[in-house]
Amino acid sequence: MGYLDGFKVTFRQIFKPRVTVEYPEDKRPKPPRFHGRHVLNKYEDGMEKCIGCELCAGVCPAGCIYVRGADNPPGSPVSPGERYGFVYEINYLRCIHCDLCVEACPTEAITESKLFEFSFTNRQDAIYTKDELLVAEDGRPRQLPWEDWRPGDDEHTSAWVRATAPSGVAEYEGRVAWSGELGYGVRAPEQGQTADADT
Amino acid sequence: MTGDPLFQNGVDLAVILIVLVKVFITFAALLVGVLLMIWFERRVIADMQSRIGPNRAGPWGLLQPLADGIKVFFKEDLLPEKADRRVYRLAPYLSTIPAFAAFSVIPIGGSISIAGHRTLLQLADPPIGVLFLLAMSSIAVYGIMLAGWSSGSKYPLLGSVRASAQMVSYEAAMSLAVAGAVLAAGSLSTHDIVVSQAPWRWNLWQLGVVPFVIYLIAATAEVNRPPFDLVEAEQELVGGFFTEYAGVRFALFYLAEFMNTITVSAVAVTLFLGGPNGPRVPVIGAVSPVWFFVKLIAFLFVYVWLRATLPRFRYDQLMDLGWKRLIPLALYWLLLVAALQIGRQEGWNVGAVLAVAIGAGAVGWAALGAALRQSPHAAHELERSAGARI
Image 1 (spheres, rainbow over the protein chains, first blue to last red):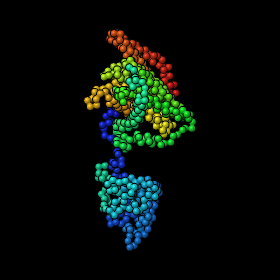
Image 2: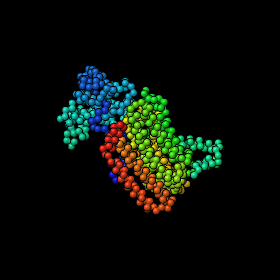
Image 3: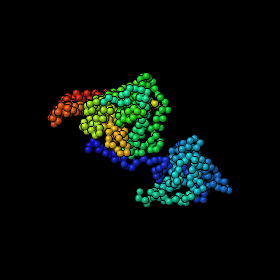
């Protein structure tokens, strides 16, 4: 048919499935190492992992993290060590989600979740403080009024760090060398990230 | 043969009212039709590109064009500093009004009776209907040309230069194709042309398919739709002749464009596909506008299909196709139809007429080929310089 073949192609397309994902209703599955908003993790006993060392703030290329450490109160320590993160703030108008803070963290206190749909309407809301970043009593991230989640979105809170921790050293890939988390215990290596997997 | 029966018993108030009502209905129906056409085009082209298309405003996104229209009406109406103010303001209307007017001679159905007055289901049936259509499509060129020229900006100017050349070139082929239908009916009145095609003597096969195909191609070029959308080639000319327009004036051009698409489709249905003629359906009843709209929508689908499929023509290809192929072919076919018509009246032998026609066609084709080949160097130079100028 020569010239007219193209018409056949376009006509056949009508009956083929659509590639469009109707976004707010349907969402694509996110990749395992997706960089979303941060969470501050806790140990299984409820102690905070953050020790207030400010390495994350130091490494942050965007300068979006503000941390101040303080000595643990002797009677009721917040973290297992000597000091804890007294103030922890991330400005999401600056954050570029590079994950360098996660790599720098010596205690896996800060990790990135897969949550990314937070459309705040003023600058003050863009600054997440410890109240918002710290996981709740059940170990799950707290949902803020302007964050759009689907059930299950909040389960992946520390995928990246479990893939290569500690400190991003590649030899640890697939080996459990990380501490447990509140609500989850010691998590297994991510599927597809283990040393013996065929990837 | 005498036009609308509405005016046979003189003109009184009722007649005037009926005419006004018809004007209003046509106007409103065309506006709604344009909105539906925009929606239809976007949905169908999305289907052909594995997308979904507008689906948020209203059921199936039906209200999307309305939302776009409301948005565009609230936008600022810009006037470029170097624009020729009066012409710049006038141009959108010059492009929109002929688009509206052209539709007025399209017969949508048979006739109906309102308050004792019989009237045709078409706004007007002037004895020069087809000429009126051609005139309106010629006036539309002015709208586009003046819009580009008065914008005081280079891309609109380029777009309008292309538009004038293209529309004037293809008008010749289109008129010759339309002339075939006029010849077959022996009348310029669109109503008579439709009547002469009833019930199955459609010009599509009465004239051979060639005039229909020529009309389809030329009309596509005439309304600047893909693959002949060089006038507004986004990749080359930003927006073409309406680059500098915004707000309501831009909306008017957009409206005119889609209305022209609907009108040329309606003309094609009228002249070649028998208009509202079609088999009687038990439920709907007699010859009804339903058939007209079915054919119209099928035709509009073809236009969208063309747009989804074909890449844009290069400018010299466009001119080649128009002047070296379509016009000679249309001219030849018109003469052939005329010869057969006369032959039938005079009782000539059809075989002899055909033999002479084919012989003459072969000679003409060879002569055309020789003329185009004669000085390849000169022709090449001409093409190059033309290409450089446009």
